[in-house]
Image 1 (cartoon, rainbow, N blue to C red):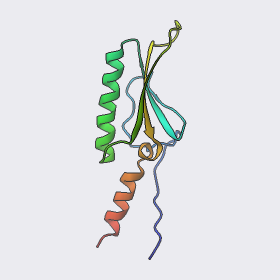
Image 2: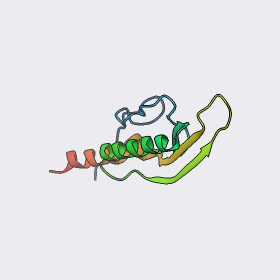
Image 3: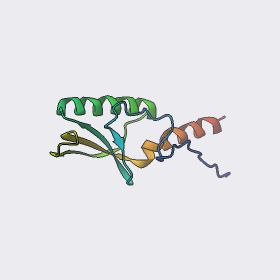
Length: 111
């Protein structure tokens, strides 16, 4: 059996370069093993809609359901930040595109 190495094309944040990008300037992917993907807005339905739209795109790109361990709702009542923070706690490997890369490697290795 020959060992094959999976090579991931990651950006400086450690996520796949072709992962659908967050479209709003106040949204971000944070840095932890299960990484929060954060959607911030003064309007909660807008933040939830952006989270759902991004999750649909990310799952379509990944080719399988994204491993989301939790959804966290928080708020920031300071004057300088959007009030609501909706966080999807996503698996780091999914954000990096590992399942997609492994499937591609297996597809290429099949006769």
